[in-house]
Length: 171
Ligand SMILES: Cc1cc2nc3c(=O)[nH]c(=O)nc-3n(C[C@H](O)[C@H](O)[C@H](O)COP(=O)(O)O)c2cc1C
Image 1 (tube, rainbow, N blue to C red):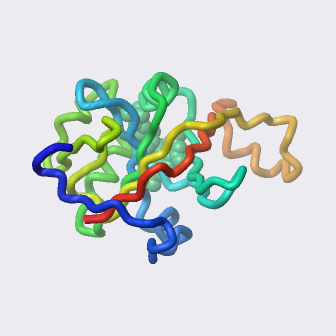
Image 2: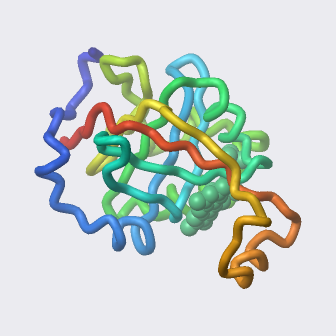
């Protein structure tokens, strides 16, 4: 564990956040990779719950995102939630790609390594560490509500990763 690691592991039952508000208003940074090489992107779509008797979080990543390559390659991802005053960092990570800027060098966003070697951010107010257990792609033929298809103008259907929440971290 890094010496500047300021997080404590908490039981997920003790998370008092409202995940609907967290996603729609606060957003999150999805991170995949390790200290040598990682990427982050802002996301406001996500799902949380119990599946196969495990606590899970699901993130949805369009294939053209640079983060997609990292999510594919690494066994885990982390979901990082921040205080309001850092919303500008989420704006940045949601409007610029890691192909164009080095997201490992964003001022005000300090990565720390978990015991599992995954990356969370010192400025986060909550971080979920997830182990990928299942993935799939959104399939256009499976839309029952076909009006949703208009969200995919270029047919860039999300790949989703179901992650078992292996750790929840709070400062
Ligand atoms: C509020 C907000 C929410 C977003 N949610 C998602 C999402 O859930 N899935 C996704 O693939 N992209 C989402 N994006 C877009 C990515 O964050 C954006 O394309 C980013 O630049 C990708 O970075 P990357 O290429 O470094 O991975 C969102 C952007 C914003 C601003």
